[in-house]
Length: 131
Ligand code: ZN
Image (cartoon, rainbow, N blue to C red; front, side):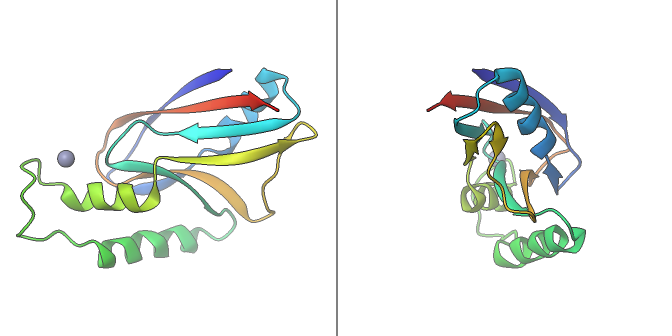
C-alpha cells in the first residue's frame, strides 16, 4: 500500500515524520514486512537519527553546512548546489522492518524528512510491503 504525505518546510531542518509512518502502518493493517519511506526531491532527503535530544539534529545541520559549503565554483544556475550535495549525502529513502505490527526502531531513533532548501511544499511517500 502506498501513502502520500505533504509537508510545508522552512529553509533548512530535520522534520520528524515517524508518526506519519506509524499511521501508515496502522492503516495498512500489515503486521510483518518493510516500510519504505521515500522522498521525490533533489534538495531534501530521508534519514534516521536521534529523536530525544534536539541538539543532535542541530549539530547534524551544522556539520553538513561545514562539510558542504556554498562555493563560487559551483555552476548550477539555481544557486543551491550545496543543498543538492546534502541531499545526495543523506539519501532519498530509508527502509524500516515491520514486525508484530510495529516499526522496529531503536528507542532513540526517529525517521526524519531533511530539508536543505526552501521553504518548500514537499511530498514524501510511505510504501508498506508485506512479507
Ligand atoms: Zn537546484
